[in-house]
Each structure stands twice: as structure tokens, then as C-alpha cells.
Amino acid sequence: MKAAFRKGLVAPAAVAFATLAVWAVAGPLWALGCLGAGAAAVVGFHLLHLQRVTDWATGSLDADVPAGRGSWAVPFAAIHRRVRLRKKYQQELKQVIERFRRAAEAIPDGVVLLDARHHIQWANARAQALLGLAMPIDRGRPIVNLVRQPEFVRYVDEGEYAEPVLVEQSREPRLLSLQIVPFGVDETMLLARDVTQLEALARMRRDFIANVSHELKTPLTVVSGFIETLQDLDFEPRQRARYLGLMQDQARNMQRLVDDLLTLSALESEHDPPNDAEFAVVPLLLELSADAKALSHGEHEVALEIGEAAVVVGNRDELRSAFGNLVSNAIRYTPPGGTVTIGWSVDDDGRGRFAVTDTGIGIAPEHIPRLTERFYRVDRSRSRATGGTGLGLAIVKHVLLRHQAELEIASEPGRGSTFRVVIPARRVRRAPSTPPDAGDAALQRGEGGAPRPDARAPTSSAVPRGTGS
Image (cartoon, rainbow, N blue to C red):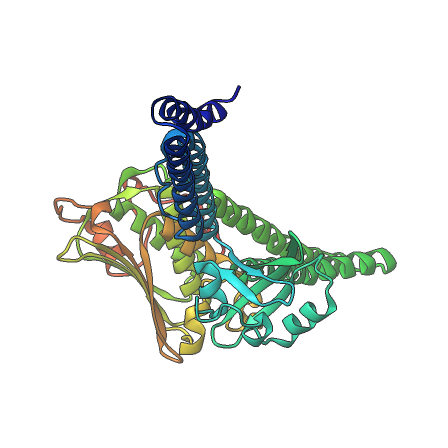
């Protein structure tokens, strides 16, 4: 027998026993009165608890379950346990929903929940920033009223959501990838992603392939044409030697291009810091001066100005390549009779400055911001004529980035240019000054001559890897 049923029989049984006792003592009338009073008390007791249950069920959802007595204690206790379990499950569900909401907010892509009519139900912070939404003001508004680009409106109307659609924003120079993903019952999710950088990289890759193909096409066409000519016609030895020399020049241009591409690729893919070591600046400047004179063939005046001897902490080979590119560019773009000055100084704050100044053709201001781009040339015909690959300044940029250095460019068309490398103070150590001997003094005055053997001058006239812009 159930506990509630047993407890429910207690009150009627007590009334029955009391009625029989009164009957035996006082007679049937008093017994009838006792029975009526007991029945009224039992009914009132149950009606009171029924009213409590009714008030609780129709009241606030957060109201506590009322306490029950007698036979009502068991059902009220059962209701209390169920309510307590329901609140526990609701709290857990609330935590799960909040966790998913925080996860959606943390997603780097924009997420917008839409109903069956593509009205906005919810959007994370990233979606609000990308699409210009304002929650909760925009809740319930059609998404096409806020994202009005024709491509997206057509994408929504067609209902083909297998692939995303690319949309350009007018208020900001940004390219967005938008895709609708169905889920649940008649619900969809709009995913928004900023693909501006990805598209820029893809465009750079396309331009790079096109530029490399174009750069290789010209020398290959020349070499192929000479080969066909030599195969079809019989030339005199002198003319044949001339053609072979031209073919060799084009082959060298291709070799320089391949070497610069390999150097640039190695710099771009190298994420580890450079192998730093201390090296003296003065011997490096003497090497660069000797290389400049060898490349000039006596057609330019090469001056060397050393303000203060110093020791630099960095990768000597990489910095020599970068400095050598700047020097070779100055020689290539300075007409015969011009002056190229290689300088070094240390600022009061400890920063080192390597500078190459020429009296060449100069560069217009609109070209300066793009000079370090791969294959960017101010004058393509002149660059090819001087043997440049279009990668020299790109190599310089990456070398300087690896050494936390900066490239400053000042130029005026018709008057010349100055390319200055600023090396941070933590990479520069001042060295005690020593009086130069006669040979070094001559080099510093730009009077020609070879550097001393202990100045580590190169034995050939080869230009450092990275053959100019």
C-alpha cells in the first residue's frame, strides 16, 4: 500500500472511531454531530492543500513549492524534488547555451543566425563589425536590408548555398566571403569572413608568376632566336662569336634572376632569427667600395665617408648582400661621370646609418613607396639594359626586416638619390678610432686604388648576390 494512501486513511479512521465512541457514550445525535464535524475538518484540510497547489501552479515560475501536511506531505515532497531537478537541468542547459554563445563570439569569422524568412535572430561581435550590424536593434530585420550588395541579394534569392559569394564593401576597402549554411528546421546561418589578405596574396602570386614568366621570356626568346639563326646560316667566326656573346649575356641574366629568386625565397621562408655575430663595419665598407669601382669600370667617382668606426651585430653575409644591392643600383642608375658616395655614421642615440648617395637620374615621389616590391621598376627598359632583375630592393627589404632595420629613401628626379639603412642601437657597438694609413685615407677620399689585404678586400669584381632592382 502506498504511503500517501495510508496517510490519507488516518483522518477518516480517526473520525470513525471518535463517532463510535461518542455514540456509545452520548447517543446517536451526538455521534452524528461528531461525524459531521470530523468530515468537515477532513474536507477543509484537503481543500486547503488543493488551494495551495493551485496558487503555486498558477503563480510565478520561480515560486517555492508549498509545504504539505499529512497525506499531502508525500505529493508535495515529490513535486519539490522534481522542481529542484528541473532547476538543476535548466541551470546546466543555461551554462551549455552560454558556453556555445561565448564560443560563437570567439569565432574569428562572423556568424549570423537567420530564420526561415532570412530575418536576423542573433549575430556575434565579428559579424556586427564586418557587416555593420547593431544588435539588438537589428534583430528581426531582413539581412538583405542591411547587406545590400547585388551579388549577395541575388545569392539569397537563388537559394544555391553550396559555394560562398564574394562581396566588396564600399565603406571600407574590404573583400568579404559570405556563405549561408542551412541548419535545424527552416533556419540558416550566415558565415562572413574577411578574405582581403587572402585575395591580396592570391593576386601577388598571380602577378609574381606573370612577372617571372615575362622576365624569362625575353632572354629565352633571344637565345632561341640566335640558336635558330646559327643553325640555319653559316656565319664568319667573328660574327658567330658576337652572337654567342649575346647569348651568354642573356644566359647570365637568367642566372642572376634565378639566383635572386632563390635568395628572396630563402629570406621569406626563414622564420628563425639571423645567425648574429659581431663584425667590423670598416672592412665591409672597403669591400663595397672595391666592388663599386669594379662595377663602374672607372666611369664614376666612388667616394667612401666613414664617420665613426663601429662593430655591428648581425649576419654579415645578409647585410653585405643588402648593402651591395644599394651600391650596385647607385652605379647602374648613375650616368658616367657621376659620383657615388658610400657613407657610415653613428647617431648620438647609438643607431648606425649606412648610406649610398648618387648623382644619378633620381626617382619620382610616386614611385618611392613601391620600390621594394618584387619586379617593380620605374623604367623597365633601362633596368633590363643595366642588368637588373627587379628583385634587389625586395631582397634588401627582407634582410633589413630580419635585422629590425629601416630603409629610408630620399630622391629628386634629375639630381640623384640617397638610400639610407638605419640599424637599431642594440645592434651597433662603437669601436675605438684608429688613424687610417695612407691606403685607407685614399679610399675614404675616393681616389681609387685597391684596399689593403688586411681590409679584407675581395679579389674579384663580383657584385654581391641580389643584382639590383
